[in-house]
Length: 71
Image (tube, rainbow, N blue to C red; front, side):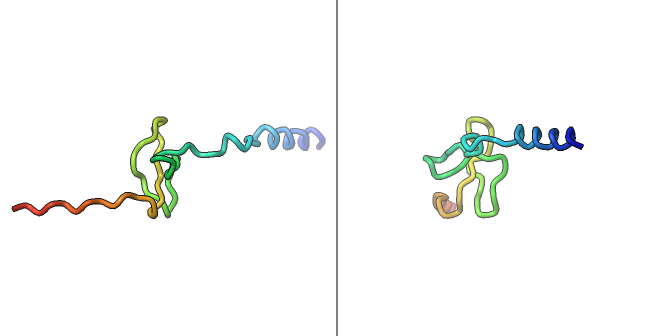
């Protein structure tokens, strides 16, 4: 029983990530975050240097210019 408890404690300690590793890399002039998946309130804009998605909040997305009409 003590070995099982020791194993559980060891796994919990080894599985703990330090706070610095959990922060996301920034992209899009500091407005976005490089992530594997974007949240519901975010949209994918382009790829980050590490091939992850640059997730940008809908609030910070640039406005798209309307397409010119064909003459």
